[in-house]
Length: 499
Ligand SMILES: Nc1ncnc2c1ncn2[C@@H]1O[C@H](COP(=O)(O)OP(=O)(O)O)[C@@H](O)[C@H]1O
Ligand SMILES: [Mg+2]
Image 1 (cartoon, rainbow, N blue to C red):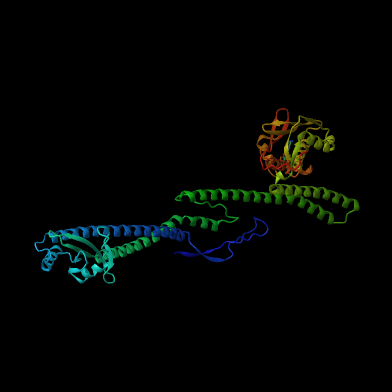
Image 2 (tube, rainbow, N blue to C red):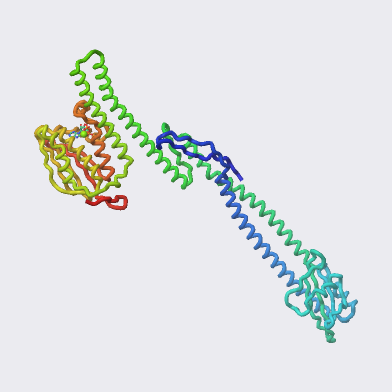
């Protein structure tokens, strides 16, 4: 059997799934190959089948041989009895000898004895075997099965007795014995021949099934080659589906889709960290430059205070950026269903507008909240989403205009729309504003402290709830953001506290 050394993989992950995974720990355990196992199973089944077939054919042959020999023995005995009855001098020894010689000519396996029917005394025996048969035969069991006995070791004999009906009424019997060693030999030869043939066949089956299994499993090599080639930096390889059996093709297809998903995930992560580094560079650069300039020569206390105040603003923005990033990162991990409650959109909108009324007042903006609806959702998250949308609306609304918040049912859930009047967003940028760090006017948003993550957070929250957020710019400088959340059903949405 083909045993091979297969290294046992032990993934050692330190600090999360994105860290490097130690490929193999070098532990090697002797395992039997799959091809070997299949071949062995096949061979065992074949062995059992062959053994059963061999036994059945052996028994059938033995029975047929016996039946044939018995029939021949009986008919020969009958013929002999008849011949003796017809002899002119039926009770003379010479006549018997003569009769036996003619009757058994060419039948060396047959031995004849003639006995007195009453006292079973031997009157004539053609051989020592024929004489011994008289002591072995069961005189009462006539016309049934022959008596089987051993003349010498491995010299099986079958004997039958048949009355001879003489004209003068003498009671004689003929005992005919057949040497069955020829049948025995035939069976023995059959058995050894069959065993030899079966052994050869079995070996052929074993090798054949091992070979076929190996051939069929050969494509599995592709998987291990692929796994060996794949790493965080090389996720572009795909398995070739051509020539794979159906089961493996399905597996390979799933494997390929998994690689695609991992590749996309890796790309997102790498884009995200790239963006993050880029975003951090600007405020850090500003802080660094400003501090260096301040230190380059002697400054008055007022000048230093001004620098520190400016730095505080920048640091505030930085800290907001970091907490937004943290929020997005945690959001990807958290289970939104953990804190699901009945959320009243109307109450929430009133709360948020109240909270932002000062910022709105500064720009002469008034709020108008209309409608009423609610869904089961994570209230903290929905409040955050609403705050982001409303603060954007305040920032981008024309001075002295109004920001409308319209609440209503939508499909199988609820929707809240935040509408403001202001500079419209160009159509091609409408799709991109939900991307992380995407801003229409980076320099302007820098000044107002935006991080470019507000809408990305709204989008993440909507998706977390199975909903969506969209934006459109209508006629009359109207910008409308719509957040739709479906009603939550099913076991996945455990409501912890009803309000
Ligand atoms: N109501 C709005 N009207 C016009 N532009 C908007 C509005 N809301 C968002 N935007 C644009 O979308 C961009 C992304 O918004 P957001 O993700 O909240 O980032 P931030 O507000 O930090 O700049 C903003 O820079 C802005 O250009
Ligand atoms: Mg914003």
